Image (tube, rainbow, N blue to C red):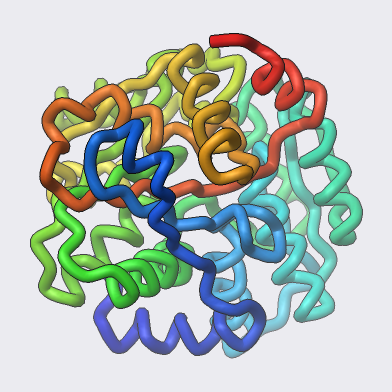
Length: 320
């Protein structure tokens, strides 16, 4: 069930008590490259460098009002969800344990530790870490924070609420899909405002589980081996998220790691903003579909800027 207008407005109050609305800018150089009017929603400007913090703030505010205070919380993450949990848990003086796969982003790991979280390495991908975290929740008697939950969707819907209230008549919005909270939040805000904006989901071509599931009408597992867009490295789609996506999204675009690299460079050259792989995916999809966008107002969600320095230096240093 999607959050209502009143629930999103309440979530905005919760989020804006901690952080200001993030900006949305129309960058002339991007408009030139895309050949139309394009706005970037800068979720790389939150206190943890990604949109996920909004969901964490709302989730933990609701948890604080519940009957029983847990001894601690646990979740699985590739980084941005974990930073959100660590940030929000610390505000409520709750210890947070986060399960990450081996080989996870070094700098995202450092950021989570700096926020006070205990990191536990397990498995080679997010799904394996997720299953292990669920087991640990029972063994340690910790509160399990899922990666997809109505409170998280309501929280992240606030970024779309800001965007739609700041920029009128957006024809098409491109939104990256990890496990689905971001695009489901966008759909909730659009529907609550009664808008007709076309939503386009974006997945990595190297982690196409949601695209395959969207086409099949049911969850379809697929290996995730993207080298760049770890925020979209989903192997197993969430059934609730998929249901909302199938109901609310026009279509899904798959973008390759090479397209994401070009989009990261384009965003830096045109705006001097740092985008992680998932954060640049929406721009990559818009560039892929630019011939159909002429004369239409487009929004792209720069969902985060948390990329390791050596990787970003390699991307930016390339010639094409």
